[in-house]
Image (cartoon, rainbow, N blue to C red):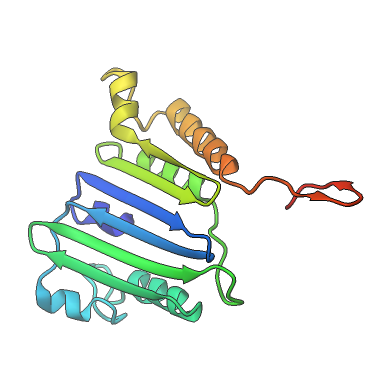
Length: 182
């Protein structure tokens, strides 16, 4: 998401799809500058970066490594002037699969840090699905309430946390009564 905003994207889409086989496919799309075929071919090299402050870019190489350690993969598609799509596949039950982390917090921070960018997050699991779109939030709030205000930041984090909680599997009953999964 950070690479997308740095590439001048006005719109960033995040789609997370978890299937019954416990495979998570994460797709990030943007309408930013895109990459030349030469840069795209080299972007997985940690010494390829557009940064001027240092000559190392670890984001894509580390993301690829995280996916591949689970038996998954990472692919990139990009065209100059048309944006970029990054697709990562993770096998969730693999020993080396990292935890998702604080998705609501990360998305809320991205919105607060890039209030002029529209973000769409769609998360689908076997238990359900939701979509969050800052364009809709912006429309509801009107122009007088910026997306980077502290109150909106807190609301976004809380709203997404509620949505994520709704995607958790239902607690299963056990013979000795019910217990909640952690």
